[in-house]
Length: 228
Image 1 (cartoon, rainbow, N blue to C red):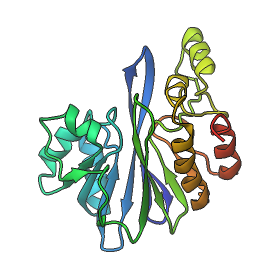
Image 2 (image 1 turned 135 degrees about the horizontal axis):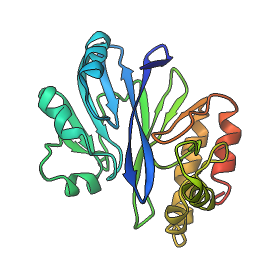
Image 3 (image 1 turned 90 degrees about the vertical axis):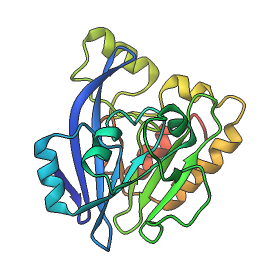
Image 4 (image 1 turned 135 degrees about the vertical axis):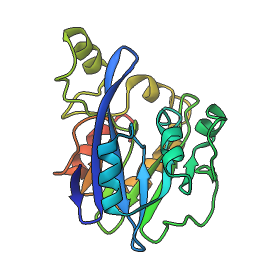
């Protein structure tokens, strides 16, 4: 557990295999002003993590921001049955065994709206993702919208592939296949990235790779140069 900012903690979990690459996992926990915990992309729940979470506060919201980040939701719901779960339309359809309160695709007054802004990054037939911004700490939280792997856990061929698809630090970006899927809807994607730029984040937290804590604006501009 790492205290990234006054009300934000980062938990790094074990890697999971995806597309022949070891994808490190990361969970972001925000303590809201009322003391409740907002948990983004829950990782595998261990006894140690459960004890640390208990010290931080009461688990209230579980967030599945895209259809790839759902692997450990069921076990979190089992341990925290009173927690409210939110996901995108895609993950809700994919995980019929999980109870979701509502979809992140909907327009509504979110319980965390006074502290956290959000934007559904859509326009691709491949995937959509809800991204979040903690305004007080100027922290942008994404899952796969940007991947920024060190490559230290990759073998030679894995590192070569990662470099080819553009997900190696310090030049991490959206994976190539997802970028290509916006071929006919770049104008829609530009509206989303414009909103993110307007937030002016100072820190970028992604689920996979190196957190950007310096020159976040320049990093994002380089990451989305293909779009803008």
